[in-house]
Each structure stands twice: as structure tokens, then as C-alpha cells.
Picture 1 (tube, rainbow, N blue to C red):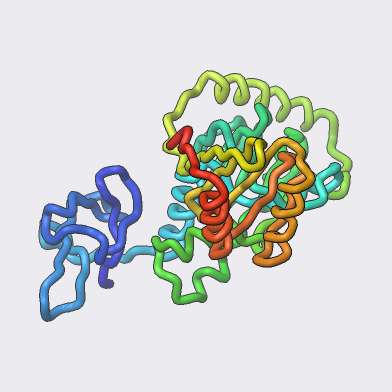
Picture 2: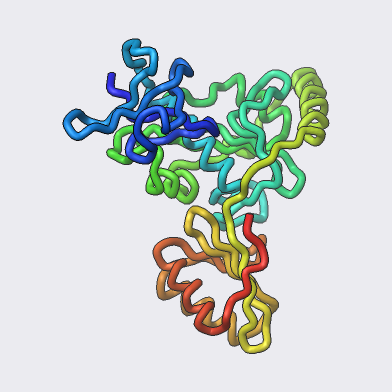
Length: 299
């Protein structure tokens, strides 16, 4: 099988077209971990090959997609999630996480991503061909931890390149493939099982609180002064733009007009106006025209 993807020196997925030729690519095989060479000649199709000249590995596209989904969420330190059932939330919103730990053992289970949002744990399960089973769901319910499943099975049927900006955008911003596994409709859970799993959760949460992982958050923060009012904008790596300000009727009217013009949504939780690509670039450009921006932070 022709190998079009490999892992770079940061253990991230890379396409053959996005690396240097030969050993200068500094890549390893996705399946076996051996050093690979980027063969990018003028005759044969570009591909990776083992430096040892052994036969190409059979790379599982499901495994590639599963790893890539975790990568982009870790890189962005958040994603757009649907409203949480049985809560006051009634709209989808971008959730920014303070901490994300992949494949973290939490007693009886190991969620794909153990995240922290507003100091509370949130589990994210990424499903490509294998979905969460009933036993694992019961454990999650016993833990009383918000858990979301991202169904990427349809992405395998598309011609999207993995990794790519298009696939990244779909993973981070699409809502059609995201559903809350917990909370859902209340279910009866045996007290004995609940006590056992809750003890595991307390221990795991304490471990998570002590654990420190350095993540590179991909966003830029801007601050503007418009009509004497501070307006802040956060541009995420996915292209989404979140705009917030102290209440001012004139500015609110402008933000509403932009929402109606190019699509957007007001986030009640964070009191911000969210705009998505491609219109988000227009919103940022207009803010810059209304005032010279001052970039205050770059993560």
C-alpha cells in the first residue's frame, strides 16, 4: 500500500506533499514507527518509504482520522459543541478548554480526550468505526461527567485529505456529527456501581489536577476602541471569530447587522457574537477599519 501520510518529529500527521524530500522530512512511519524517506521524484507518485527498504506498511485510514481529530482539538484547545441537554444552554457555542489530556486512564475507562472546561471535566469520544458501548456509557453516567461523541464515520466516505484545513474545519465546527452521550434522559443506576465508579473519578480528577501538559493554543486576541467602547475579538485557528464588548446599543446594532448579513450567532454563555468563515475574515477587516487594532496576545 502506498504511504501518503507519516508522523513528523512532533508526532503529528503530515502529508507527503507538505514535507521536504528524502530524509530531510524527519518523519517516521505511522504504523511501525520506523524512519521513512519522502520520495518526491518527477516520475513516480510521491510517497513515503521505509529507510530500511522494507515493504510499505498497511496504514489504516480509520486510525489516521482518529488520531488527526485528537490532534486538531488539542491544537485548538477547543471546538464548537451543541447545547447541553437538560441545562439552561439553548445554543451551540465554542468551548475553550483549560486543559486536555489524550487517552487518560480514569479508573475503569479511558476517554479519547479528558478536557477541563470552567474547572469541570468533559470527556470527548471520537468515533470512526467503533462507537461507545452500553457498559462504558453506564460508567460515564455513574461518574456524572459531561461526555460528547463525535461521529466521523461519514468523513471516511469523502475525498477530503487527512490532514487538511477542510477536514480540520469539519471536525472543529460541524454540529451534525456531534451528540451528547451524557447528560441524556435520566436513567436508574445502582448505588453500588455508582459509589465504586465515583471513587475512581475522585482519584482520577485529583490526578488530572496535578497533571500539567503544555499545549499550544491557536488563537489571536485583538482589542479595539470603537465609539469610545472597548471591543475585543478572538480569532481561532479554525477561522471562527468571537467578538465581545461592554454593552453599547450602537455597537450591538452593528454586530446584529453583520450576523444577519453573513451568518453568526450570539453566545449567551460568554456574551459574545460568533462568526464563521468566510465571513469572519470580513468582520475582522471591518473592525480594523473602524479602529487600528492592537494585538494583545498571541498563543
